[in-house]
Length: 265
Image 1: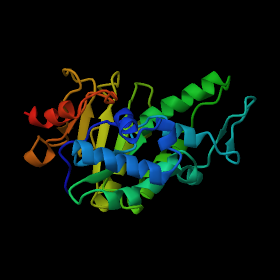
Image 2: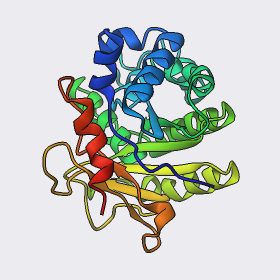
Image 3: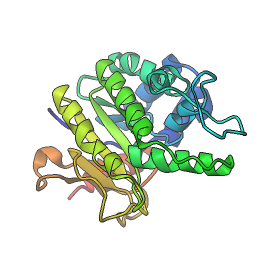
Image 4: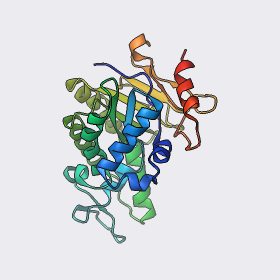
């Protein structure tokens, strides 16, 4: 299993390259794949995130009209069944773009299907329940089933790896913290990479460390980065990964992006 060197967060920058709004990119797998491939040509990064947006999985979980109706629901909150999440927009656009994107990239570039992590998805759903006036607690087993389904779907579609956007808190159920180990095992089975983008304010004491590499986005950095990954094992040349300090602004120059790889320790 190999890992890329530079895996920048280019959501807004990709929209600039494509000349479209982010919402437009997510309306068509072909459009999304073309935009990501065109951005890779411009920047030259070897790790392509498809597609870094922490709202996509949550949207797919609550958009299905025929799903799991919550007890005491008075505000129309219906959760998509875990099996149906991969087929529900906008998450389905992400998954369906993997194969056409893979064909448009050079062999040296890797596609990382990018999803909200179990800890972050749990807290997002808790927020939806609370804002809807529900007293229900989010079922951790529902979150686990959703994550397992989307990760397996991406790997079966030949993604080179999985990337999670993750935040854990002291109240995150322990079984969701352990989910990272299950994802790692699945990634290893498919000979795929497993990266985690650790959001600021994550709980340091409980944050899982089962991925091949973790990017701590709270790490102090100048400008847009770089942020260097830390690994489960001591860092080695094959696991010296870089990302940006966050989503790269549309007006960032290509030279600024390319300079990050030269700034690597």
